[in-house]
Image 1 (cartoon, rainbow, N blue to C red):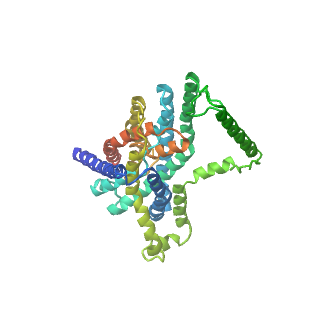
Image 2: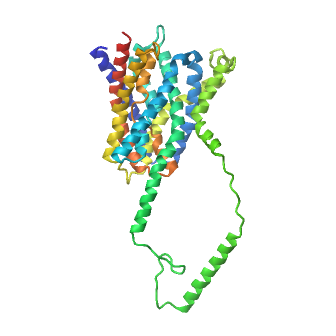
Image 3: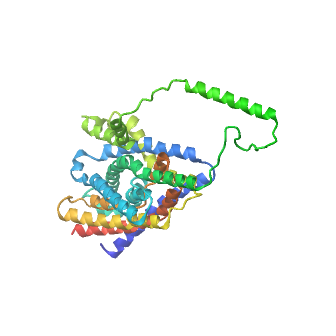
Amino acid sequence: MTASGIAGAIVGAIKGTVSVLMTMLAGYVVAQCGLLDTASTRRLSKLCSFVFLPLLLVSQIGEHLHPNELRTAWIVPFWGALSTAIAYAIGWLGKKAFKLPAWAILAAGRPNATALPLMLLEGLSKDGVLDALQRPGELPSDTLARARSLILLNVVVQQCITFLAGPNILAQDKKQDNSVSSRRRRSGRPVIQDVEHVGLLQDESDSDDSGDRDDHATNEDARHALDRLQDIPKIPKWKIPRILSRVGKVFNPPLIGACVAALLWVIPGAHHILFSPDGALHVPVATPIDNLGALYVSLQVFVVGAELAVLPWSEARPGARTTTFALLMRFAVMPALTLLFVWLAVKHGLVGYEPLIWFLLVLIPSGPSAMSLAALAETVGVSQAPIAGYLLVANLCSPLISITCAAGLALVKHLER
């Protein structure tokens, strides 16, 4: 690849990442102005994850990813899962070696696999960078659609891994927080309150007898009320079997959308009815699905900016060691391992001649960590503040992914010789 080609790739990637940051900045400003609060931001985030993303999967995978494509595209979800497992393993070693919090494992291993690469691909396509990855006779719009469908395959894998492994990893920080708080309580001076003197009431030695009698009567009434409450029979709670709870975690909305997209290829005539221009349901059903799914990319990036504005910042100190380790993993270690993997896979015939897939394999495990880490921390009950501080730094560093894009395109050109 010539120097001008590398420079063009870097410029195109920088433009794409700046577009992402500007969209994120818009969400941040809107939230700072009070037009979005924590509750509304959460609702928008759930709307993106539970509605728009599955519809995007149906429209992109269902329309563009033919089952014959899986003969070569299988490497995309495979490398997505394998690279995440490798990053988690390195993150676990880093946690043990450098005494990092458990969320550093997720920060090192969970890339932003959805909105950022999708918007980046759009920017690269507009600048003509993806033209070098086209099949013979393929239109630029078809190349972009095929790239988006392959990226969305990895999204399904990443969502499943996050739902399964994420809570268990973050629970380690919750246990550590509980142990620290218990040690603080043991080391501090205990506050003793008896049943008669609570809150801001003063302990007056010369209090009158009528006050004592009133307090005693009040305490007696409270004891009788508690005794009556104890007589109420306990209603047994229905417990979901562990295997069903795990199945519920696996079958998340993106996976359901991918399954629906697969069924459209399996059911005879379904794909033609929905996605062919002369299909009976193309205009009334497929077009709304496309329009709603197209809302996901920009809206999700917008919501990420809003989430950064409403997250707690009073204790947003992720630590220099944790931040440095996670950023090195996301922008240096994983891209380097991916370049080596792609080179070995192509040289040994594991991947066929598919320049677009080679490039996407480099792109998949690179870039900043996913914003879902903050929402996952809230679900588990871990403090979001240090994670929010790290995510802000990681997203500001996202233009560094342009170096990975240029290296990936240079590798593709080298392998095409």
